[in-house]
Length: 339
Ligand code: DAH
Image (tube, rainbow, N blue to C red):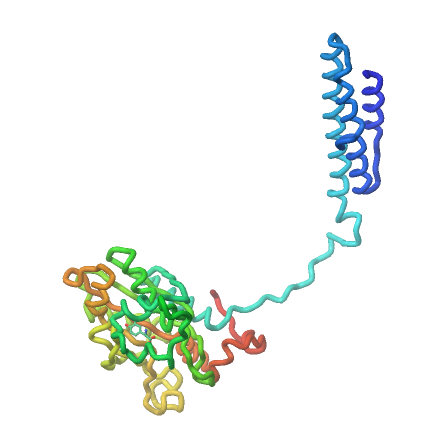
């Protein structure tokens, strides 16, 4: 037995292989279930008791040495794989052309950055939503026209599941979960059942902002809006608020900025008015606060929402909305950003 062990030990010591396959064959030969070491282990039973200790030790040593050696043989191919192939690792890499950020991402980041400087943080919600968060919680009456098939993509009727038509749904999701003060900005994709043309698409992007605290007033909203407009479009930008209606805000307004293309003189883009509409806003309706478990006698807040495509058009004068989703690199490459 001892001689057999010695013989195997020196055989294994001298073992060389020239391919990973040979290393595997050697493993099976020595360490496999039917390999020579296993059969020695089987023979161990017949060793007389007084020799068992020594033979046992030598057997273990053999098994360990064999395992180490096979591992070594295998490793040599792993390490030398690249060196043996035709790949020249010292060669300089081919230049990989860097992509550019999508214009909508650039503008989204810019909008979010401005609001972050005012202390807002990002919140997100699902695109596939329930009726409650898109409509009911936001004070839409059951027969409100926005629920109409014209606008909404319905996915399931009972319980009602829809593709969100605006990012205002994130407002109520956050209000339900957190206590004021709340200061969030929610960027995201929204869907509407519209015929696709140069000025409408069945999906587009919005950014929503929401601020809830004690004593938040319309003056705070105006100040935030003015700050945003100037940061986004330049110091000289003017704003004006027109009364409007949204179910979830009272009072509601739409904000125009002085047309940044003609500087307010009048051009085709602003239809010669000198003003362009960029967002909807207002004081959060007390019903919405109550729907989300926030005491409307203690807290008030403002909300605003804008379309990212619209802001991007104003910045870059993209005439056809469809360009944003066609993935034409000749279009996309024209946008460079620091973001
Ligand atoms: N959700 C509105 C829309 O999609 C935009 C909007 C208007 C959001 C007023 C607001 C708001 O938060 O206060 O047209």
